[in-house]
Length: 177
Image 1: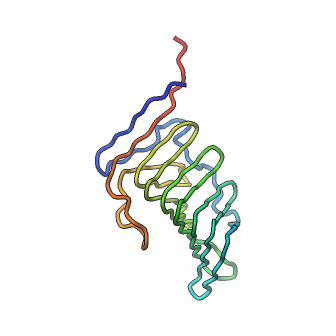
Image 2 (image 1 turned 90 degrees about the horizontal axis):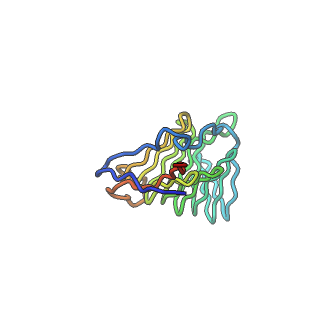
Image 3 (image 1 turned 135 degrees about the vertical axis):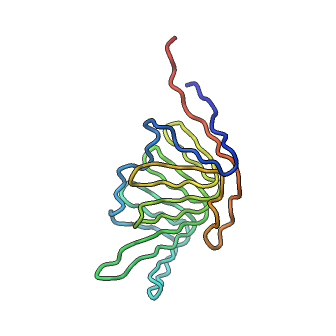
């Protein structure tokens, strides 16, 4: 398969995955599905409405899997417990089928249906690779935006990825000429 290297945007530039089948990232994800977890340790902070998971954490929601060293899950506690946000740090990996995104830290805002990864971000899908400082995935539209910045002020305790460039490789189908 022939490959080409493209995408070198200026400082704080942004890039969107091209409008092909690979433009849609994590489309059709059900963010209302139950959130299952597996971890080495759990700390329930009931007064703060959060749970801290550590030790090889894996969270699964539908066919989406999120892995990291540590996660904090914020929830609202009414008649039922509703997960609102998941903050992940330490070698974050998000997978679904052949889609894979990695970074140093991630925020999954279930209410807004947004996943944001920061720090040494990579997005791989069907042989296409994108790299940058920050990745934002809109689960409603399936649109993924990568930029070279660290995304402004990082969450507490997370180092900024700093300014940079977006790089990538897209797979090109073979022409029969």
